[in-house]
Amino acid sequence: MQGRTRIALNLRRIRAAKGITQEALAFDAEVDRSYISGMERESFNPTIDMLEKLAGALSVDVSEFLTIPRGAAAKPKPLKPGRRPKSVR
Image (tube, rainbow, N blue to C red; front, side):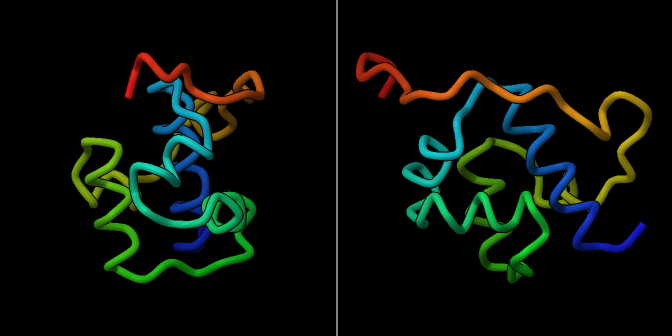
């Protein structure tokens, strides 16, 4: 499995497991939501600095993005669309 694919799958898996939308993650990491989407679709190749920002926003170690996803973890279920409630911020 290529690195970009691993990062895309793990980013989406971690984000979905925490119940965070792309928009909320983008806000927390101070990046554009379309960049998060592009990484999850393997359109963008993130830098180490970007991975560190995302890891910080998700409260995980940057190494989590490089693990080999297994079984059902490789294809997480999509989250419901919408914004995070204001009371959570």
